[in-house]
Image 1: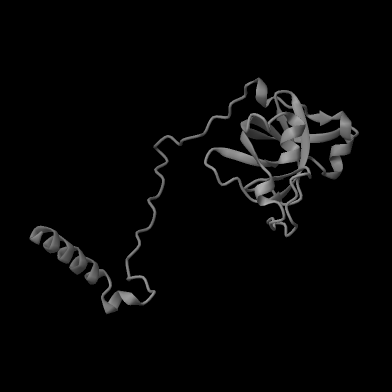
Image 2: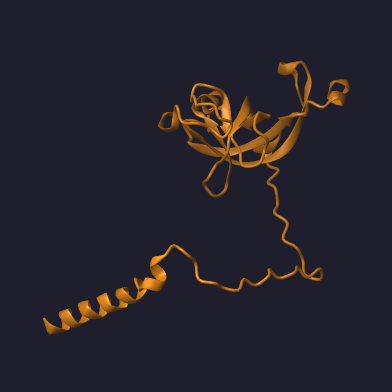
Length: 173
């Protein structure tokens, strides 16, 4: 019993030091931050490899959209999200609707039209949000978009991505 009391008192004393008046304010202690190391050009750089398997093949033009040119931008794992976020504001300011063909991507500009291809099935989505926030995923599709390409049942899968090349010269290609 005395041992328990002694351990409890020691724990409280240790915690009491962390709650001292000097730390009660919401300020960080001054710490010198070292500069990041400069990359040595003699060392090899890590370059991630893109899987160019059959699931990542995507046509350069889309006849469904009148022959507009699509620029491949890689691919990777995709997932989808639905009713749990319905009505929440997206990064574009609109409310998320799982029945629309939209998606979340970390870096593509909001409003970009993206062709997502999964096992030969494609859907065109509009980027209206940021994400995904799960490591290893490149895009989060709305429920409707996932259903269009058969990804909803699987939950996630490897997709190919291409963006609409809407530059003025793309119509002549």
